[in-house]
Length: 301
Image (cartoon, rainbow, N blue to C red):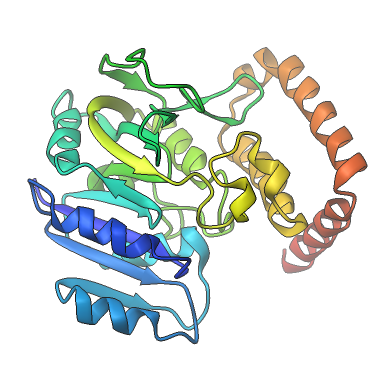
């Protein structure tokens, strides 16, 4: 069971070095580690190459964001299984060994989630990704203290993009126009979109609690004041907030089926009323940005 690891980085702080150190200490070493350097104009990747000669660096002339970077990395990888990581993650030394057990449960397991904890190693970040009634991504256990309440393995809707383990066969089957992740998303909802597409094609997700990984929530894009804090949208600038809203609607339009939309219409409606009231009071510039993006999409079509 060969594993390729893909990490996208924008060279923020020293997250990447900690992530790579935990990968190189795995009890089951990966076949390859590919770092996608999304920090154009820097010499950051040169230092990584010198310190970690077994790591392959792919340097981009421009920031391809999470989706573009991951697509490039997956396309150039060789493993039977693909572990997609944020650079602000650190793996337990048995993470890969334990997580691979999930793929053996059934032939249609295409995604595996471990238990993702915050950097304090006490607070849960995700024990699997789920589709909420209001059609957002729900990280099970998000922000709760870990008291062993999620110690049972089992099926989940999908996996968090912070530490997403995929079967290559599934990725190849569900890709769209050559994209594994929809490159239009850049970041936000790209993991839910992929998992929803997979479920619509008959693939399943599985949770393995013994596969431990630690994540700095928001470390790659939030200000320091927002790291590991709840209600992440409070710490997003207008541009990122615009992407968050746009991508949710795009995810629903791409993947929702009519019966499901009818069943969830009221929760979706209530959620949207609350979300748009928040935007009108605190982020009015987001409306202008959305209108500009809609106008650009119409011109391109």
